[in-house]
Length: 394
Image 1 (cartoon, rainbow, N blue to C red):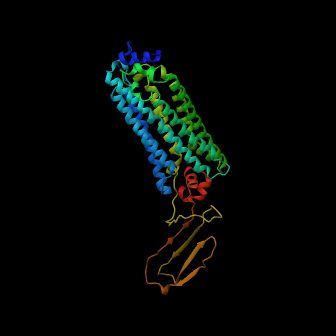
Image 2 (cartoon, rainbow, N blue to C red):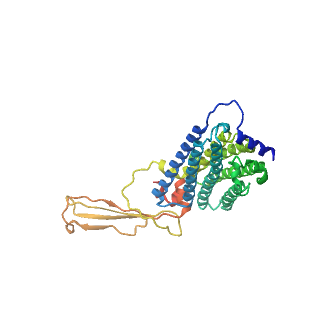
Image 3 (cartoon, helix red, strand yellow):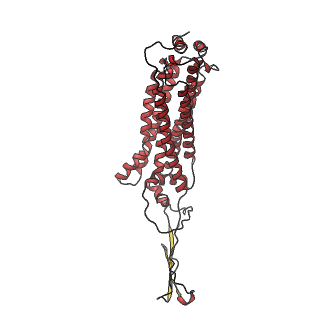
């Protein structure tokens, strides 16, 4: 039996003999996971409300961020269950059942802890694919590389983790089987190295998701002040990058931890922070229309349609009609259009039925680009999207 397996068996079966009190980090853990997932839920609902209110539909990036949120909620519920059976307390104060159940719950919570931020990063990659579609100077293939890399790297590491003991994964939480660790499982240091690799790739992805929006902003025609404001929305992945770095650092000595139920709590907290930060920073840029003060507009009927092939610029045509009985001999119908195609008409008053009502109506028909790239560009504030979709920013 290896030294690591012997130490692990002793720690789980008998508990560490120390003079520390029976305290619990569980309540802090529960508060942290539910407060953060609540913020994520509010942000995602704000994102979805904006999309449905402005664009009248959802897109693939929304589906992925919804998936990330659902997995995050399951992670919070799983951690809560773990705290109920002893996660957060010193292992030597727990019964044999509590030790096994806390370790089992904690082990399976890692599955959701890795899949949720993976889906969140993939969602933001899809958003950037949409935005890159409005700027021919920005290539899409690097985005696809990181999109596919997120899926391949994270799934591969998870498979390696959950198959490291073959079909004997219960060794991790069953005290009577822990002595078989050296026989059935690979060296724990290998899992630590894989964790470093996974964390490093996720950090690199966050760095890319921070840098690419800066390129898009630099290419757009906005004032410096507007560019800085837009960067504050689109470059928030730097926060996810910081959380990923800290989480990777916390994983440095996982294979050396013996008091698992207590000492793993800081690592779980940083996993939770990273998970929720990824969801939040992927959603905030698309909530921008909620914080723009809309100006008063006349009553309009807007009929979205595909624009003419020759231009992305909007065209509008409106007509204005007013009439009243007293003091007038005729009414005037004055169409207003850029082309002045329809001439002005005068209608004698005696042709109208008597009425003392003044009616004023205005109709505006606007052609807008309804394709995904320009819709997303308009929502986040890129000028090319606002030109193609003026109605989305009003």
